[in-house]
Image (cartoon, rainbow, N blue to C red; front, side, top):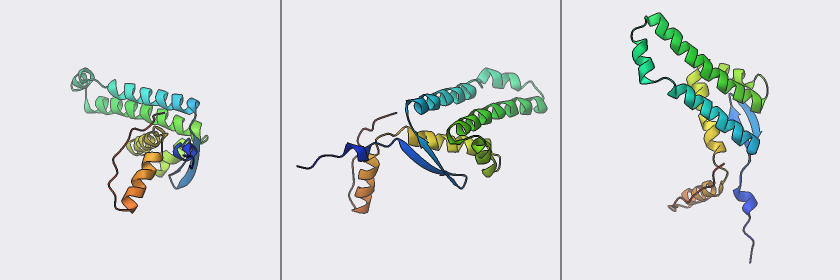
Length: 147
């Protein structure tokens, strides 16, 4: 009887190609907590733009509305750049931002994609799906462990 190799099913070390460079990260409890903090900060920032605030902004000039939105974009960008600097090294967040033509939306999309990968510690389902597609079989999804 052969042993089931659990080690091949668990992923905690990641290599991402972001902004044309390979960037590695080991995902431990420290990184999981940091990721959660950043996600909470980003969510609070976005949720902080309430309908009430938007209605109040309607009474402001276009320049005041643009200044408000610019402030929110700057806060969001600073949070995400800080995360990338912390995990990929100083200057990496700005480098990623610059690579994507200084687009905060692109930067936040990159962050979301990294976070989505880090949320999946159990890679066995991905391997099963790859096998199924390669061999023309439909594979039912199973539950995956979260970080």
